[in-house]
Image 1 (tube, helix red, strand yellow):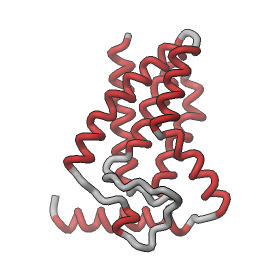
Image 2 (tube, helix red, strand yellow):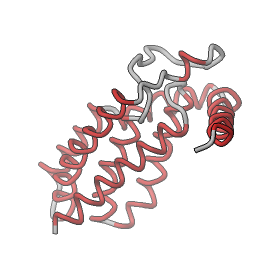
Image 3 (cartoon, rainbow, N blue to C red):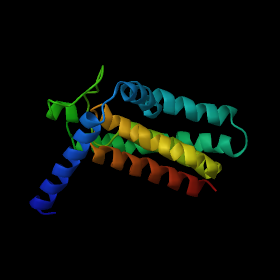
Image 4 (cartoon, helix red, strand yellow):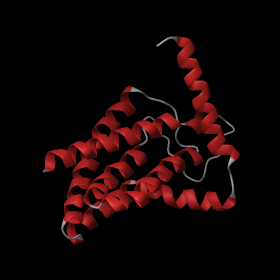
Length: 176
């Protein structure tokens, strides 16, 4: 890819990041995104998957097991990519970034939270397609929360979404 194209992409990504992180700031959104972002964290994603696997009935139980498998597998490429492409988090690069308490310091690419939430929701959507009306927007909001909180660029979240979705779709496809 030519350096002009790369520069153009980086410029537009930075603009989108700054828009989400600085222009739409509001007290309500601070509270909302600070809470919703945890749905993509290790504790919530593992607990939701375990609860579905142990307490779910029928297709939701299977979805819980598939989610656990997809969650585990999807974090292998995330770990590899974080080491191979050590991208600094936006708040470490852009001093005007608005962050909230205890920002992460590891590499930002790709977003592990976004990967996790998509790894968990996709098997649920396959099990009960109507859940997609709620779960897909919820997962997208988790990805957006990562930018709002100053922790990820848009491409971090897009790649996390792609990894989580791809691994989940392959897991579900090979399951049956």
